Amino acid sequence: MGIGGVSIGSLLIVLVIVMLLFGTKRLRSIGGDLGSALSGFKKAVKEGEDSREALNLEAEAVQVSSAGRDSERSTS
Image (cartoon, rainbow, N blue to C red; front, side):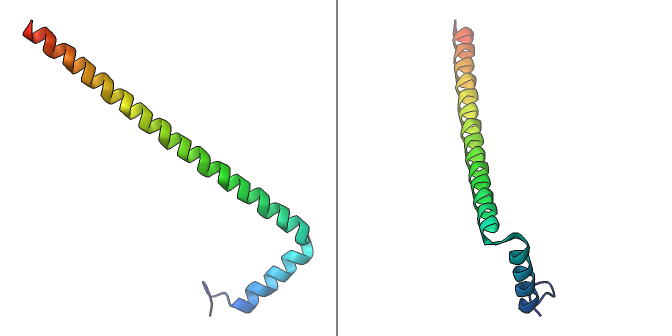
């Protein structure tokens, strides 16, 4: 038995049928499209994380500056 009860022979038969139905050129283009979509998704996630970090740093800066003003008011 293979992965999840599916043998390697069964997977090869399915692969051959898919290649006959779609053709190798179309499968290649689908693979390229899928690769570029995943690349775009990873880029967007990274940009989201970078912007989140920037917002956190900005929020910390605001908290520090407001804490400094509060301490100045209490000492005056």
